[in-house]
Structures are given as structure tokens and as C-alpha cells.
Length: 279
Image (cartoon, rainbow, N blue to C red; front, side, top):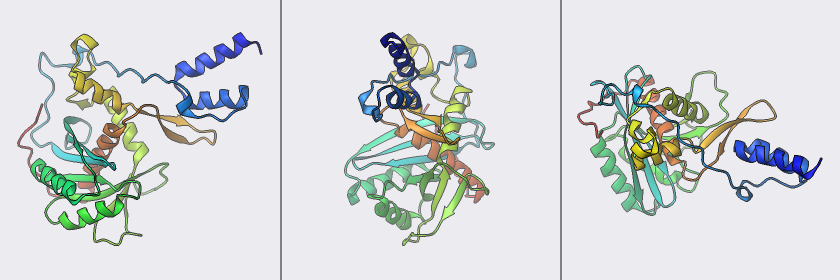
């Protein structure tokens, strides 16, 4: 190959933003290991929702019987929470708010603050990420302590998912606490979030998806983070979710909130009335 041909192949792989193409180029053309941090990928632009999807000058509002659910992502230095209002049929959902609570999540004070926030939110179901192992003990302890006062479930995403009995399965092994702990199909719910937004089923973020001069900067940032991961095909014929931008918590939180809705429907949790909508 000429240097020009190699450059064109590299440029095509780089512009695609595909780690699979970049890893193939590194291996086959440069005889070196692929490391994502060595390559500068652009964050994909947020999808555009035109004003044609808006009814008049008003954005679509959630129905009166919408179900409020929350997904909580647990990091070492913060909690991130996304609150959704989901239509009873599960087809449409509304972004209510996203909250970041800074602090050491090994501290009891942080968990008390989280309890106060969840108590005021009055959700029908809340999924809390069980973490990477370092915070799992704190999550299960919290869920066990407050499960009688709040609809809480410890959760963990799994991918790939090969269960034949649905997208959610209860986990009991290795749980020393009396805390409900479920695994959910992370890939399925992440796809549902991204495809739902692109198809116009994820409401409440329309202003952030308008052209730049009309966009809401906070909501636009949130939309970009909903697309901070991408599903790619592996050589074995399966798929894997690849992180392509930092701070993917909004995607994880939205996925957990949708999983929380499906779980609440499956176990027939008593629905709490939605008495306010921040948008």
C-alpha cells in the first residue's frame, strides 16, 4: 500500500468513530495494539428534532396516569439521578429532571441525603445501580433499610443478555441482605432509550434537540450524553456497547428508569399519583 492509501483508510476509520474499524487498522496496518485513549474521536452530534414534532407552541405533556420512575447511578464521588414519567403503555416517556449529588458515596450522610431526595420524589419505582463492587455493600444496605418506606430495588445491568424469560430477572445469590436485587438487560434498555428518542418517544428534551441557536444548553448536553455509548457488532456475531464519550451516566440512568417501569408493571407495584411535572 502507498502512504496515501493508508492515510485514506485511517481517515475513514477515524471519521466513522468506530472502535472496531480503528482496532482493525491498528492491528492490520500498524501491527500495534489498539487503545482508544490514543485516538481523538469526535462526540457525535445530537439528533435533531424539528419543530414539526411539536404541537403548536406547546410540547407534548405526560398523561395524568403516567408512572414516575427513577434510575440512580452510583459513582465513588457522586449520585446521578434521572426521573422519568412513563405512559402506562410504556411507549412514550418524559424527562422530568436529572440531578447530580456530589460527595463521597461511602458516607452515611450522602445516603441520608439520597433518601430525602427519593422520599420527596414520590416515585412508583426506583432502580439503584449496585455499582462496580466497591459500593455494592452500601447500596444493598440502603435498599434493605428503606425498602419498607420507599419502592427501592438494587439493580445491575447485564450484557449480552441470554435469558429466555424476559428482560429482567431477580437475583438472590450472593446477597447477604434482605434487599431485592435484580439484573436487567442493559443493552436492550440502552437501545430503547436511544431509539425512542430518535423516534420521538422520549419527550421533555425537545428544546435541547433544536438547532444550536434555539437549543437549551443544559438539555442539549443531556441529549449528547444519551448517545455517549454505541452498540457495535463483534467478530463473533454478537454486540457490545462501546463508550465513545465521557460521562455516560444520563444514558445509564434513563435505561434504569425504563427498567424500573417494566419491573413495577411486572410485580404490580402500587402506582403513585404524579402531582407535578417540572417541565
